[in-house]
Image (tube, rainbow, N blue to C red):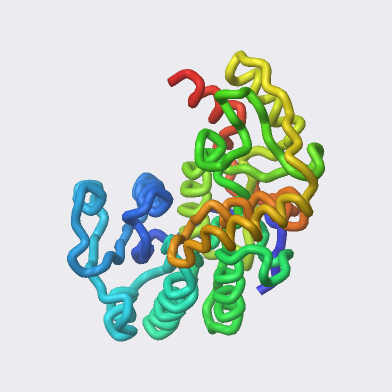
Length: 314
């Protein structure tokens, strides 16, 4: 399918009679997608592993989600669980055995069950513009994407840049203590940010929209590092300064050293993985263009300033 930059599909394109099959509903993004789907009147069937319990699963039951335990290693069980669905939405998280192997079984199950549409667990920068080897986790997504393109099913990947929420702690860019915004390379390179909540809402709407193209690209806010410094100062009431840690070559060397000293091959997000993501963004290659923010006009996009201000007021 080609990626056509379209604006607003009519309400008649929504398919709410058949359930949305959601894999990964117990995670943060998956749970928000489930709630957004329910708010829009959809029926949601969440696929969870056998024995799954805890407050997240309990909350899903209370919300009215149909929670189905299924062995993700058994194609027949997955196919039965997907039967009657209008779209499979994957929000699975993990390494290659999940993003490639498990998602491939889920994809085969969707095809065998006759589900017409599939949304993979991408939710990232535009990995299609990156060479293999520049980002381990995105390599897995690209490998699965190539399999998805060969499958007889309509597919849509949601690309959202970096989750804005990460700027309040997990992404070492805005340093609240020393009041610095750290970066490598060009301070004027535009960067894409979208909150988890906005990504969930957009994904839910896309799941109910039978006209989606192969890729949809969104950014709740687009700011450069230089602009992020000003935004951080305005949002917190403190004066932030830029701190250039070096060029992109320096960051590449730092990634290699960190990966050698702390390989963490079984961790999904070791420190060097986040550094790879930042390096990708600072190069400008995976910049999201064109943006499809206007496709669903009812979404109110949350800015970087709003996220930093809310964090500062706690």
